[in-house]
Amino acid sequence: MKRFLKVMPIVLVILIMLTISFSLQGKKVTVNISTCYDDVLFKKFILDAFHKSHPEIEIKNVFSPSNDVQLEKIMTGLVGGKTPEMASLDCCFAMQMVKTGQILASEDFIKRPGGPELSDWVEATWEFSRYNGKVWAFPMDCNDIGMYYNKDAFEKKGIAQLPQTWDELVATAQKLNDTDKGVFGLGIPFFDPWWEICSWDWQCFLYQNGGEFLNKDLTQALFNSNEGIEALQFWVDLVHKWNVTPLQLPEQAFVRQKVSMVVDGSWMSSDQSWGYKQPIGDSFKWGTFPFPKKKVGATNLGGWQSVIFKSDAEREEAAWEFLQWVFQPENHVTWAYFTNDIPTTKTAIETKTYKEHLANNPQWQAFVESLSFARTRPPVKSYYEISKNMASAIQKALYQEMTPKEALDAAAQLTNELLSKE
Image (cartoon, rainbow, N blue to C red):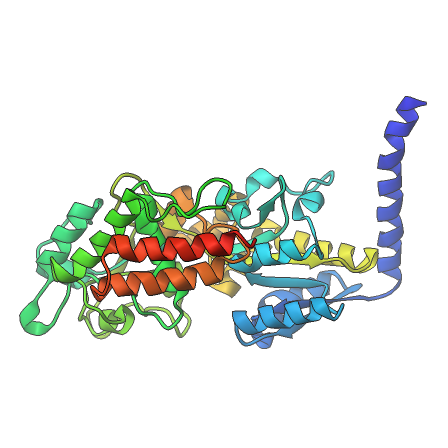
């Protein structure tokens, strides 16, 4: 009897799956997915191929023009009891979805017999949605931060080695400086219109110096530690002591050859309109390299995650069928091309197709290598508000309105207040 009882749940699951499978074959199931993906490109790269192999399922794109608009739509829909069956959204929103209690745990799908292995994904990508011992979102693609450099400028200055430490970064930037021509050695996006970039980039330097953003149980700020103060002081010194970094947006300065190295994301290696073209101008060739380190190597991870909302068995299974298809290695490589990001599964990264992509586009290699020491932003519901406060504090230190310690202590106080309400 006990053996029968142990077998029964497995039998019931199989029967339910068969029933759903037969129902899917009998009629078309529509799954709405909330995204910020362009309708035409999403259809061209992904949906047409999926629909061809899965005529019983129709995936409809519910487009939002920005991350913030998308989040507002979803949260409003949750209040009104009307949400799409799926969403693909910025990884920082994953925990907000988890805390609604209206999504299904990705781990429960992935651990089904015959499903993909959790260990196949880049480990850090799970941290955005790990909650109560489970992971809840599906890491769709990822990006990280590193260094871009002007190869021509390096050659003209006789610089043969790429910097690997903070000290080497400063020394290299000083060699590249040409104050007579208004050229700086290093650009950092302190004042990007999306304030998150400032906070996100600075966190890399915090981690490189051995610091932590929050404590392990995510209840207290740790970024105002000695390691954090040193990391912010390093940024201030780049501007005011060594005079190698301007207080201006660096992307166009890099294009105009007014900065010779720049901190930027892997997405700028894309051939899309926002990316750095290769070459820039008549003779400006550029390359990439991983972040220099102080104590340890570190970069910060970004990307997109998908969630499945609670609906009914047919639509939930259809959503999972779509995601399983996306995570097939070759399809996942295509997804990464479509989103101009890096695949999140090791099997996709190891495909012949993706290796050829890296060989033909070597600027991506530094960012793929950096995944081995990538960190994630803390999976807390109030992260965006915390980050906005952090960016403001960093900028006050850069303008020397506050010392690094004063700025980080003030940001920590606000952070702790927000965390106490989680």
